[in-house]
Length: 232
Image 1 (spheres, helix red, strand yellow):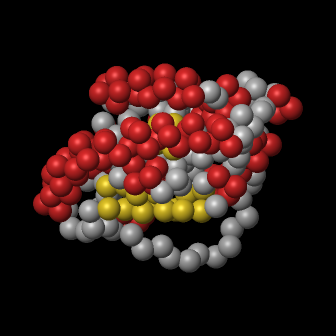
Image 2: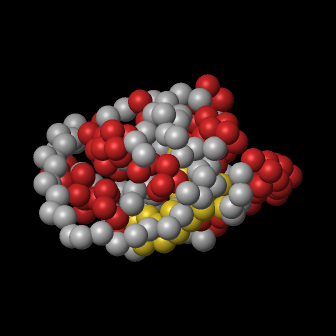
Image 3: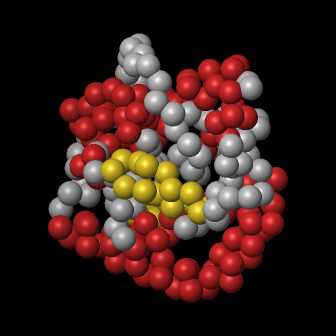
């Protein structure tokens, strides 16, 4: 997907969301060495066998993508990690390669995308892409990011650099932890939630984090994915 440079536009900074957790109360529970080791051990213990088990599924999805529309199998999304370090989050491609041209024909959808960073009825999404998104199969390649320690199995959702402003005074708190493949947002309605609600869920996770919370979220993720809640 090609990105063209446009003239500089000054954007109005959005109002900071109201978090259910006061800024002064937020704790960096995942910053200790023991916490990081425990989280890494859980990630590796689940990710390595999962990748080996679903390798045939990777091949089938790749074939379906190639047969459905021209373009690469994988897509790299530039996102923010811990301490603001940028990395490429891997995904299966779910859009047509000329997605920018398609979106340009729908200015009302472009405005919705700029506001919510998500479209409920996105004309850029392919037929196979809709199925992959429905059951979050497009995010399976992010298991590789987990092995690389760019991501964790559980954590705040990944965001693009231009989304950080939406977190207002909680942006620095968000950058203290590794983003996750799943998290409170993913098991709480996903795209059916407002952006402020997403911020609140991320802050709630960071404040209440424990290894047991990660395990509970992993178990809650399975039925949420099978139901396709808020996925589009």
